[in-house]
Image (cartoon, rainbow, N blue to C red; front, side, top):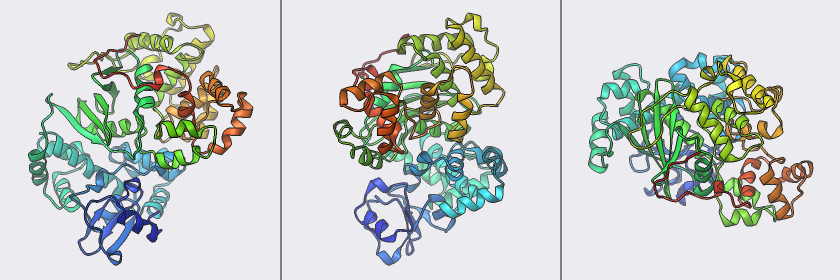
Length: 498
């Protein structure tokens, strides 16, 4: 979009927040870059130039605006809606892969050479993987500086910088302030968290966002010990690279409040990425709802409660295991089966603020489970153990960077994986916005009530008009049933029980 100057100028002049993250405005006279919704007086048109990423602005020598803080814009929805190499690379960079494995590691994961990835990212984003990772390190450093009391040396290494000097230079270049000045400004305006060691931050999103199905679904399907709804927040444990964490996510009209407790601050970037992915915060609801509104039978549901997101997962392997446990059983039964696995194989954790007790067991921990101890039909025990084995040995990968169609083919080849299981994993674990569940009982009931075709083949043909947003259509169709997944839980403290 940044190449359409006329459209960008209109968005800047109208301070349209819908375009935050789509492009960035760099001002030639002040050498500052802003988000489109910046509250400052717009510059003259001849003084504006537009870039596709904050990294490209920084690489061109512009520094971040102190008023609109463009480095905290929602991510571009392009990386959620696409499955090409650039989108997959951006999701990996967002997870901190370049900091941990370098550009060669990023390229190896994608099956390209480092030169090919560099060329593709430069062509589309105006910055290569190192510049994009540097911009992300700067944003992580700012969060740690402003929300924690960590010494600056610890902030530098936790944010992914290789030296304190590089950290200081980058912060000064990007924000036009020294690290100490950033902390002093933040200290005057913020309230310290009630619990020492907790990182409190705001996760932005593009409005509208309907929290009912998003948090309702997560709370209704929560695995006891791993997830809970408490005091108006969805809380869960996180398995991270350097340790574990606990996050509490609370919906607000203009942001999601996140409270993170991490055993190692180096996991902050990954934890934020996982939370944004879980809540689908980088979606473009205007584009989704505009297309779904074009169907006269679906439009009333969209107009009634716009901005529904797809509730995802923090770990693809975890969700695949839970999807198998949920085959042909009720939500309550699926949670009970998952809770048993957690108690038997999950790593215990301490939670001073709630009732979380374990991390969900990873495939390695589940690889040695005795199928005879599973209270499941024999065929489903085989399905589960085969899945766990494939995940544990690496022959099946279910990550944010996974090729959607390849994963579908690999899942379909496993015993016991039918269309429903494959598509629900594609929708919630892989993030495919076009995943569709025509065989789902709730979808078929909704279709019948709305006058849509109710047979899977006919409904799939009708749903072609909803592409590439069929996963969002699923969220609207599910609202036809009066099910707990459609309702935001009450704000009273409530522990989810099996």
